[in-house]
Image (cartoon, rainbow, N blue to C red; front, side):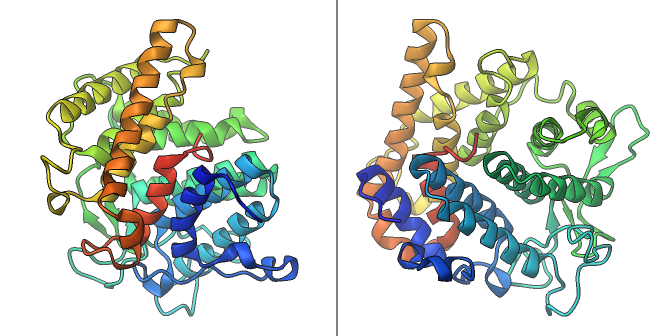
Length: 367
């Protein structure tokens, strides 16, 4: 698993900080590998971080064609299910889950604290990112059981987070208790409905029976977000990056859909304003006022805009400009010593910062 490309060496370093020096593993040790416990997650795992971790291993596989990275992705998935699919004491599966349906009770966030305003529970947007990671694992590896697990997870959590499903416009909640019995945050997340809609469609497309997979769930979310993003705007770099990432699935090549083009364009307008205001320039906006991982989310979204999918030279140049701007974000944080500070990030979020830096450099496993 020797990597010599400077780009991939830089990509690899944060991943090894989070998950351990997996490049030195022998072939026999690879199949027994367990990821290093993260200090940011309960019992060492945090769902958002590890969703991006899986995708980054898939990126490494795509760039190197080294099958060992598929093994590492699968081992990380198993470890997450064995920890976040269980109660906090690790003694039993979450309510609703069984050995045959290990994700029948959803997956915990992985918060350090059990309760309180920042306590454990289940976040819809974390769950959809994990569904996406499972779906991509299936697509890249050819093992459709991972897509089946994604379907299983949707079926378990969708009825809990999407309420009043019989209404013309169902409503969503942002956070549920660990057992999915109590609403902890009743408001809808900024991008929850459209992100869920896109991920569900990707899962459906990878299903062996797409005409009968997640049809009702997709319709629910279509009704939730219909018209909601016509005037979308945000000042949050991560929110804007995830909006571009979400929309890009249906804005490139032959898959352009009007709603997605609108969300992408409105998010890019907001990001353009942030660049114009020098938001991403540490000389004018000191890092102590910012969170690196949120800006890496913006860079990741921008890097999903592939110039090669555009037919006109003008569109290609615009996409190339956004790719350059993504590099401005990561380069600015590199100048601040982010790679050297990942093991002692004074702002916290160390593992999230690390994996999202890698994703910002190359979201190859993300799309």
